[in-house]
Length: 151
Image (cartoon, rainbow, N blue to C red; front, side, top):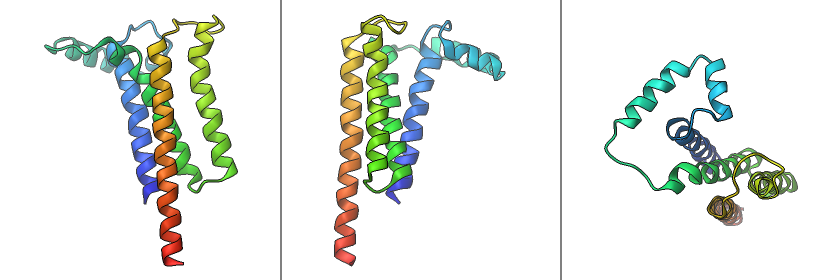
């Protein structure tokens, strides 16, 4: 049951990160060309207009750093849900995903990737990775406890 919970929370986290990007970031980002190709430009334009009419704003890290952290967190939970038990495969996939998430930001630091390096981005990605791995570890411990208890 927790595997499904991890999957749902992971997908929602990824979706929320994408929604923040779609509603609050400049429309020159690559993902906006994807929306156009999918025929979603008009819907997105309307949603962005509604968002602009809201009487409040968020801190900058909400727009610029949080989406990456949500994607990292969600991606690791999805991997945890797919692989379930703590296996070599799950560890390899989670480590690979964590390295990839961090590499995008570090790639900006060393000018291999386009974008602006931000220490807040990097720190939020690290926290989200740590949190997702800790949740997976706690869940794994609970599953072992149940197996020993019932076995």
